[in-house]
Amino acid sequence: MQLTKKRFTLIFMFIILLAILLRCSAMLNRSFWYDEAFSILISEQGPQAILAGTLTMDEPSVTADIHPPTYYFLLDGWIHLFGRSILAARLLSLLLGIGILVNIFLLTKELLGASSALLASFLVAVSPFQVQFATEIRMYALLTFFLTLATYAFIKGTRTRSWPWWGLFALSAALAQYTQNLAAFYLVPLALTGLFKWDGKLLKQTLFAGLGAVLLYIPWLIHLPSQFAKIQHHYWIERPTLAVLINLLLRYTTNLPLPDKWMLPALLIAFLSTALAVMQTIRMARQKTEGYKIGLWLAWLSFAPPLFLWLFSQWTPVYVDRALLASQAVFCIWLVWVLLKTAMPKVIQWTMAVLVIAGVGLGLSQLAINNGYGYDPLKKVEAAISNEIKPGDLVVHSNKLTYLPFFYYDPGLPMTFIGDDPGGATDTLSKATRKILGVSDSPDIQSAVSGAQRIWFVIYAESVAEYVAAGYATHAHLRYLDENYTLNSYISYGNVLLYQYERKP
Image (cartoon, rainbow, N blue to C red; front, side, top):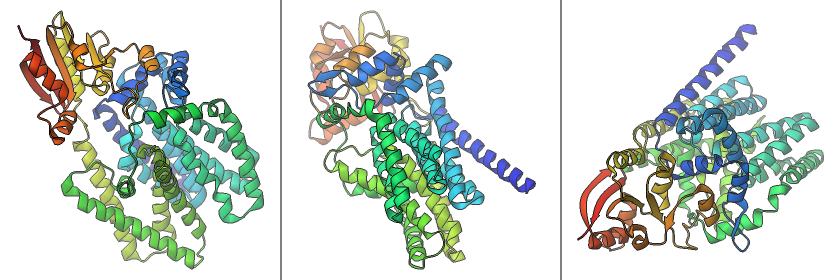
């Protein structure tokens, strides 16, 4: 027994080490982008500024930012301890990702046993979806940590009927809501578990624990109407189509994005592995095999949250697949249950195992060669400008997406960005937040370049392509610059384009 425990410990430590290595690769190589820059810039302002940037009313009953402040508070403390570097900030998310693995191990061990817990932890450790967002400087790793902790506490509370576990459930559920408003789309299906069992005592305990979570959440709950108004007025997310549900299976198994030549194999892997799991779950349920309710419950938590989120988004679009990392982790446990606990024929078992491994390999290889890994174009553009900029030059960004990372790299650069159309879907950086961050914007290209002799203009290639696809010769900002300035140079850094213009005599 001692040898077995030691072996399990060594295997689990190997899984943790593997997870760290994969996530370190992502942490060191992935591109730094707008949302990450925003997280650092707002967090380092301190708690008072974070609350002001989140709760200030720019319009009647509309808050400045749509996210609760817990992650920003945590990142603020982390920055004070370890600095504001990108690597230091990403390390916080990496550590939270290791905490997620521990939660998954404990949850699976409670449900299926230690051997299954090791395999489930391994799948979550190597899952391309988890690896991609495990080190992002955003709140989703923290959200997934609290949701998986709430799930474990819920199961322990259900089995032991002990109030300390229900207290931990209430606390972790409230903290998840304080981290991301979309946590409710996972917590509600989790709380509905008691309805499947028609267990009066369980329903009563769930209700009291849920009320406890709501009471803890009330200080922020009163701000939800104004945050919801912000979403309705200014939010970049479009109403999801049925294709989003297909993309969900790809996220769960192989991840996205993928090259066109890999889409068909990825779809086959996603549909075949999921179909085999569904068929096996249904077979176990029909035969009333021991443990079949666990399989049904795992499938429920894998797919009910995204389905509820998708349905809600038909009214107000809020569908963000990164908010479904907890459901994907439960999906990994469900696959382990199917593989190890359903007595499926060996041929089918090995076929499904090969499909799962192929999906992981496909996704990880794509992360290694694409998605910005190993190449940070914005940093290269900023370095090129900093080396050649002269007194009187001005850096103009076509929008805030390139400006904010530049502002993080070098806030002293003379630069501005062209603001979003007021009230438009992309108008997400509010006046209150811009004031707190100290960033400078201009209403249009004419105002942005006024008085400058030489212009460094930064724009994403996708922005230009959108104008060309709509039938224009080029982007409106470039057209104005071409008409009023002389183009001295142009260079492409991946998907970021850098133009240098000089005023015509």
